[in-house]
Length: 269
Image 1 (tube, one colour):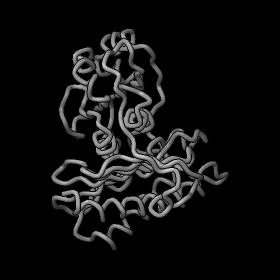
Image 2 (cartoon, one colour):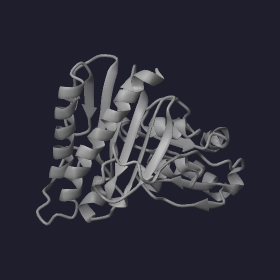
Image 3 (spheres, helix red, strand yellow):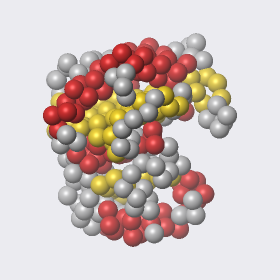
Image 4 (cartoon, helix red, strand yellow):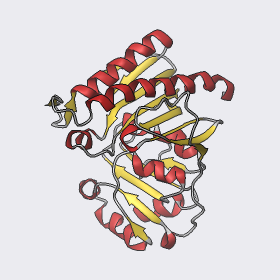
């Protein structure tokens, strides 16, 4: 599958360039339009504009593929599906906090095989495709990710093998409580060397870079996770649900450097 995924990865990076152009212009804009979705979560004009632009581009470039996005649902059918979260971290985006990203993934038969996480306000982008490795690029806001290779390096997870030496970023304590896992969450944190809550896609990318050893949370949708999976796995890590299911369809995520995965699952069981 490796050779087949190279054009898809290039397209995903081009889509991220397109998304960055739109999102950066709207970030901290005085006329940003914010409304409330039926689930009471916020949505901005930037969320809708980014997803619409990506859908339009995919209709031109991959008309045979289906698309599943946070704002406009599913269009098309088939084995190949592009999964898009136009702005992951909308609440941060609304408040002017720079921790947000566009998440773009390609899944084949429900398995994410290409992933791009573009965080232009942090001047960082991560990407991977199955069999092609995982990479990060440091650069200025709005710099083209597909063509600009400056600051690109391959990434890999840490080699920390004991929870007592681990840095853990399990987000959203209230979500763990609502899932009936508060005591397990606290027990895991007490065993760790260090705990932080960075939020949204960022801690998973830090797992892939070897900066954090464990990340996880509840109340996630497939579009929150799909782009993260190839990056963590191609960096040498493991990605499952908190209960250990090896896919993105169970509403939670647990990403580790692989060496700690069994211990983390056991601690959270």
